[in-house]
Amino acid sequence: MAIESTLLIVKPDGVRRRLVGEVLRRVEAKGLSIEAMRMLTIDRSLAEEHYGEHSEKPFFGELVDFITSGPIVVARLTGEQAISVWRTLIGPTNPVDAPPGTIRGDLCTVITENLVHGSDSAESAARELKLFFGE
Ligand SMILES: Nc1nc2c(ncn2[C@@H]2O[C@H](COP(=O)(O)OP(=O)(O)OP(=O)(O)O)[C@@H](O)[C@H]2O)c(=O)[nH]1
Ligand SMILES: [Mg+2]
Image (cartoon, rainbow, N blue to C red; front, side):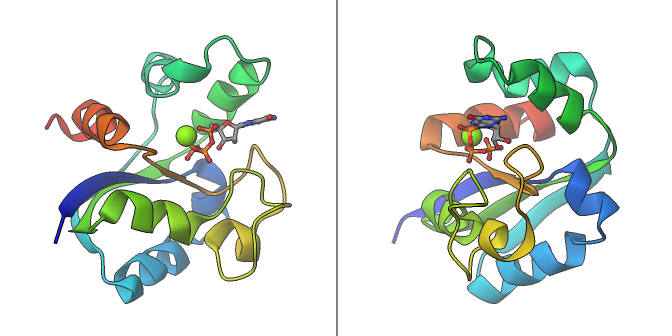
């Protein structure tokens, strides 16, 4: 067993489209535990820090505009190999390529408005959980 924790974000499109419950239903049905959760609207400086690895990319401005455009839901998920399990539930970055059965494959079509975020490694999970939950 390798119990891990990871960061979930339901992005502003997910909140606007009333898909928070649908996302959390899938998380819980899979067997991950929601150990902490809150809703907030993030400012540009937190968004730029969270997505710092993409600061030189051409889509960075659009990404920061979008993630700060309304309330998001953040949660700490814990369970067996939670980091990769959560990424598998989400599906590939571009919803056009995401297979049915994944959150992005079932529920969205546009790469910027791809509904949810999941930490992509143990290092990212530790860094991102500290940003949003201080631990
Ligand atoms: N317009 C555009 N947006 C992109 C592109 N690549 C990534 N993004 C956006 O930037 C976000 C972060 O990119 P990545 O970290 O590489 O993708 P990800 O890990 O699947 O997505 P997150 O869980 O949001 O971090 C993605 O969720 C997309 O919304 C791209 O080529 N074009
Ligand atoms: Mg990412």
